[in-house]
Image (cartoon, rainbow, N blue to C red; front, side, top):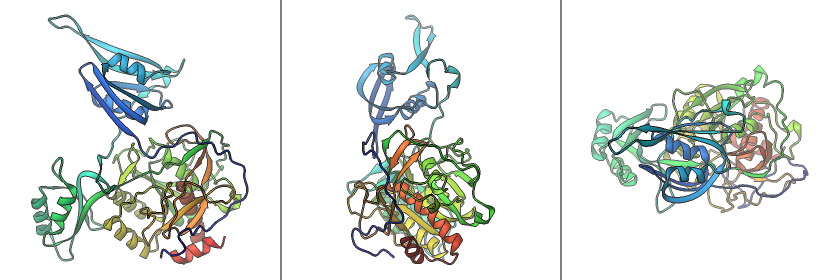
Amino acid sequence: MKTGKSRARYLIHAVALACIFLIISASWAFSLEVRLTGEKLTLHAESVPLQVILKRLAHEGIKVRIDPELNPIITASFENRDVQRGLEVLLRGLNHLLIWESTPAPSGAISRLTEIQIFRPGKKELMKPLKEGIALLIGQDAEGRLYVKDEILVSLKPGSGARALEAALTRVRGTVLDQYPQFGVYRIQLPDGADVFAAAKAAADTQGIEKAEANYAYVIAPPLQYTKDYTPSLPSSGPGADRKSFAVAVLDSGLMPDSGLEAFVLASMDAIDLGQPISDPLGHGTQMALIASGAVKPLGVNPSSATSSPIISVRVIDENGYTSSAHLMAGIDFAIKNGARVLSMSWGSETKSQFLETMLEDLSSQGIMIVASAGNEPTGKPYYPAAYPSVIAVAAVDPQGKVWEKSNFGEFVDLSAPGFAALPVGYRGDPGTYAGTSISAAFVANLTANALYLKKDLTTRGLIEFLKGR
């Protein structure tokens, strides 16, 4: 399905609109080390949200209460510093209180830090206990492939059964963590520190096993914040009942409870923290939901170009911005069972997964439209899942209709679309004007749902041609 010149950038709709090109913040990922030894604290953090650091301290048994609105980006580095002095560095500029507990001992009372409170002046009542998040354990090999540590995925050949799976488990010393019968895939837990690529090869060489690979990981390519300006413009009502059969599944970092999208959401699920109500620790999923639903339109877009669409919000991305093939299988299965016709995926990596490619091909053959962002680094390299043949890959243009300088390009790109939006929700930060191919993909997902509503028999190729002609 992928055709066109290496810089094929088909403009959906854009008009001139002034924009201040001052990059305030941009980060692809962050690095973090937190170590508490006795009363000594070691911290190495580069562009890390404060609450992520505090969650590491919470793992050490320290209770944390914080105003949810307080989550500045932290860059700090020190070794074996007295915990109180270290926290003073970490929390500089924030109102906070450290609570200590004194325990009698033969050599005298011993004080231990038991609680950290962080609040805005005069608003201590807004503090809430900091919920410990769930983060995937991500590794990266010499080729740059991202994967979940100590896990592989396995599928069986037709006609093979439990014996083949048991033989593979014995060979890699693994256990079944989960299974996805709709895709014929098993998620296998390996011993700590296992070589996932060697284990995948050993499993694949087992009689009766069709294929095996690492549980590959993908990361948000965060939109860049250009200004802190935005104008709230949420509509008063959601899409009509006749559009419920054309829902967009937003597979991302979740949805904030106070997003204002209640009238748009048909269903929601947290595939990262199963059984919990959906939330959004990053803000990215909420941003994409606002765009995919049509509640917020990108800058430079004619107001009639985006129509209200129902959405299915699925959290597949952890608090650090990563997802995996396995979590995507769980999230996509939920979305399809709840009526999704369009999948919107604003993240990716340069790692190719046979399992993910096969799954998306099968869904495409069933009439599911799949849209993904092309990436926010202009490398020209294929970016997955956007580069799979079954997926509509979307690059970005600015409000004047010009190619956005950070947008990826290449023969795998099918469309370009407006990639700037004024959003009432920030990505790990303040509301404002953001830019990224993630916005472009979510916007095309909205247009796709509307196109299917108007022309129900569109194929993926027909849909691309239809959108090019807008």
